[in-house]
Length: 109
Length: 123
Figure 1: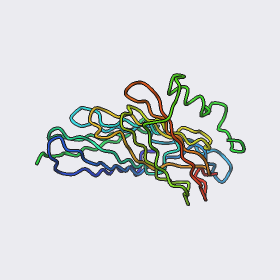
Figure 2: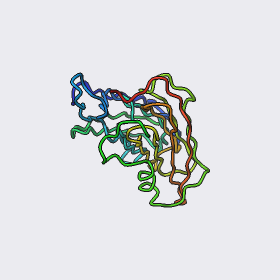
Figure 3: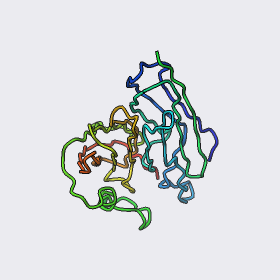
Figure 4: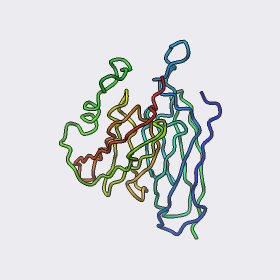
């Protein structure tokens, strides 16, 4: 299921060199756990995002392994150091092989 | 875990998951903090935060879920703090456990009991 998946990230536009910033990410995804049953009693197959990564200019910030116990529309908040101007790259990996990504530029003030 | 439906025999127990994460090393107490609500009205989305001063990796388990794994956070070179927040599903009232692998190679653990009014594992 790759329909209606929309990543949203919140990154400040500017930071001082070496500053710590807070990043918030959200991606719309139903995160079907594989535990639920439909009306006929059949198990609805698992369909989740299983990995999320955030990198800055090629250097890793966080790498998260997600399990079915992560809520619908996975949300993450964490802190990153900004050593220089550049670009944050966010990537989500779906069970079905789809990869969703988005980037955010940040300038040094 | 008793009383909850098992998702086949493949579901690893929490003990197995902890052993796989620590490689069988002893798990002490110390530099790990887990912030979770005491009471969650809706088990479908329970906000949690893990933090530690020197962790390289943090494993989160929900001991009472049909599959206890929740997430594993790995912190890279540009992580400003060894902390992250997310939202998780809890099938019912249970202990949430966080285990951190510290820079010196040791493992520390903490847990927090969350009372859940409405479970979050469907069905």
